[in-house]
Image (cartoon, rainbow, N blue to C red; front, side):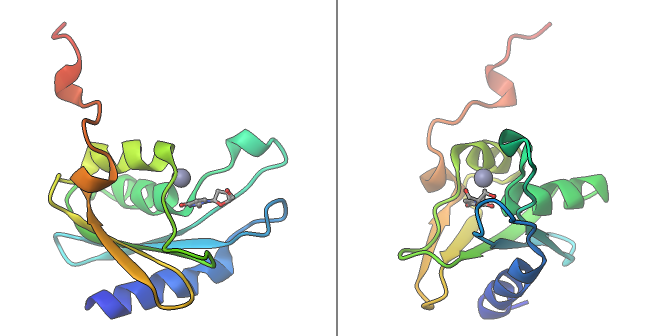
Length: 133
Ligand SMILES: O=c1ccn([C@H]2C[C@H](O)[C@@H](CO)O2)c(=O)[nH]1
Ligand SMILES: [Zn+2]
């Protein structure tokens, strides 16, 4: 799938967002190395902190489906600048995405900021930082 199609998919899945509290729908689309597409939207909760962002929904759907190798991601929201993923999502991305993997951050004005995982979360805490037990 092309970069533009992936972005279009991220924009479209915003329609499924469950956002009664923030009224701020976000969409994400993820391509696996095997060529499958996983989408995610944000899903909020009356207990606000239990809400989950679009990016993590897409990654968790893919991982639950047996996928662990990813190629490219797009994230879309109606923001003034290309939407910056939150810190929790950056950490989850860094668990599964290689440092060179590209993430297209976009908004509804067709502004796209393409970053690598390493640019999005440098010096991230990794499995290899844990002591060997
Ligand atoms: O990159 C982002 C930023 C925010 N949100 C969600 C979390 C919450 O539901 C709403 C407002 O923060 O947007 C995402 O899904 N992804
Ligand atoms: Zn997030």
